[in-house]
Amino acid sequence: MKGILLGRLLSPLIFIPLLFISNTAFGQDEPSACVETGAMAYENWTKVDAGGTGSLPEGVVNKDYIRCKACHGWDRQGTEGGYVRRSRKDTRPNAGAGDGDGTSRVIMSGAVTADQVLHAGTGRTYAQGTGSWVPLDDVFSADNTAANAGGYTLGNQHPDFSTGGMTPDQADCLAEFLNFEDGASSAYFANINTSQDPVLYTIIESADAAAGEAFYGANCAGCHSADPADESGFDPDGGILAYLGSDGKFSEFSHKVRWGIPDESMTRAAMGSPTSADVANMMLWLQEEGGTGFAANSGLTGTWWNSARDGEGFVLDFGVPGDVLTLFGSFYTFDNVGDQVWLTAQSTAISGAEVTVDVFITDGPMWGDAFDTADKNTMPWGTGTFTFPSCTSGSVSLVPNAEMMAMGFTEYAQDLTRDAIKSGIGCPTPNAN
Image (cartoon, rainbow, N blue to C red; front, side, top):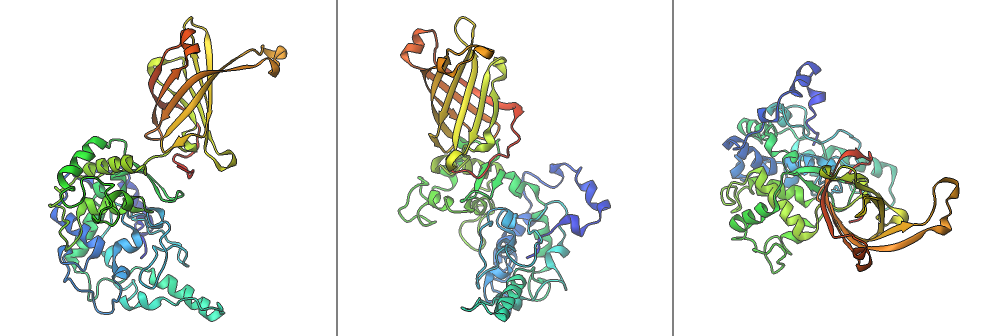
């Protein structure tokens, strides 16, 4: 289904001023009943809870060929979000990936109209959905390959919902939902890294894991297990954490938990009418429980410090020699008599967002022409742990060994930020967790 691209559908004179409207112009704390109906319609507009009849329209065999989410994704980002690896089948479209139409399926909130939703007179017919699929034969003949390519593209096109399908009220509510900024992916995710498999989601920095655990216990544990790792048959199969460990599932979670599932017992009211903050809080807690959250990556490279301790800091370089993410780190600081000291570390002991290091201290070589590598003495200093909950925040703890304690060093722990000098490397990047 073709994306709703405002830059292509609206003139610059209409589009540009929208950029200066605040988020609160479209978003709100409490969604209207129409927004909630639109959210249900986005999942499946034929359902009764979504304002539909409960039946598929004539000519539709497979429901995914008329569901908005089937091409735009649960996060409205199409293949630029959780559906990055979604494949085309005879039972579903594939969000536009790999066909002859390179139009983005990303939906840009702010000025979506009901006419854009309906595609009256411009969309494909219902029958052109599943019926467009032509599988490749064993010999990949020219005619068969062309038929496959043509059908592949046609089945991904936006349907004409105006005939025998979606009502005008449903289209209006769908547009209102898509313009509801507090329901867009940015309300939950600071970053969706599609290069990593499974997709790596960075939850918004304001999320509170403890609050998420409390909300889950009060509103979800009654139907699902109180333990999200429970695999004893609770829906979904394998437990919540196993479900979220699959590719792109945080996108689906964010929609279904915020808005509910149409014509099923998992309604928004039954879940305590969660806000976007409630959903983000739960996802952060579940990431921490399942180890599927933010991970150390090359994008953390840079200079980290604590502004209250101006004059010392950490120079960290996350590289990938031999395809293994490795931290090269140095700490410029001072000893107990005020002399400058450099501590160094190198480690591949990286688990998720945590890096454990052995720390060393060196001396020996002289300045300038007198420098001789053979004079270098590398002595164990102790151990340390770096933790990074996001691209811009972290913490460090260092523990000296007995010899270094005797020299006046003590245990050290600080919060760190990277608000002074950044490396320019994108964060997060697709490196192994």
